[in-house]
Length: 242
Ligand SMILES: [Zn+2]
Image (cartoon, rainbow, N blue to C red; front, side, top):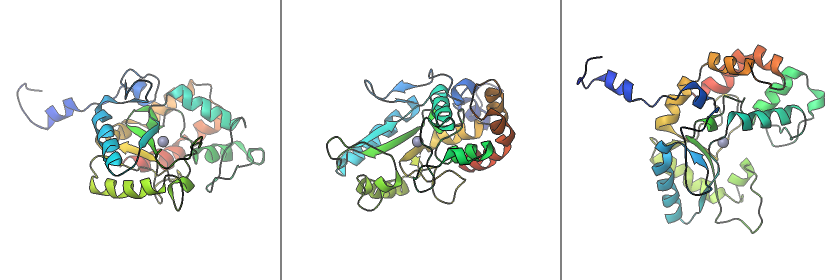
């Protein structure tokens, strides 16, 4: 590339692509803490998160982050515990699934309804956060991050009504990737993606990057996962590369 030519190539060079190890959550070297003991997030979303929290505060809410960055190893532990029956697997409406009645392929899809395949979680990038409103919560309330909490008389319902309008008004910042009618992952209204970066990282994540990592990982249901990877990629990853 010629130096000093302000063209599309220059833009390309500046694009903040993540190395594969960051993309699949092996490292957290690309991240910062939002505040002391706060969640780890990508430095490129810090200002936007703080601005959204301030707007929420102005509207009478106390927006907090339940989850920011999650590592590959953490996602692997969640996956393995669900596969081994050490952590409940829930169906579409939040009822526990009897995993003993399912074959291995069915178990994979049951887990994928609510949990990403390790390496494929958007929480690996630091661009995605799970948010909730603490302002309406009774003392000692234990956050569930369920759709019930976000609807009707749910504890975060008013906040989510406000958030829906806010996101529509500012579509270039945060958006909800997991909505009804897109892909096979259940809707997660609490999960926000920072569009300017997440859209880039989403397209970076290829099936071969994932396969390479999973082949050398001690993951439960490994044979089924590797066999089903093309289908998993098509239904649980690609639809969210928007
Ligand atoms: Zn999430």
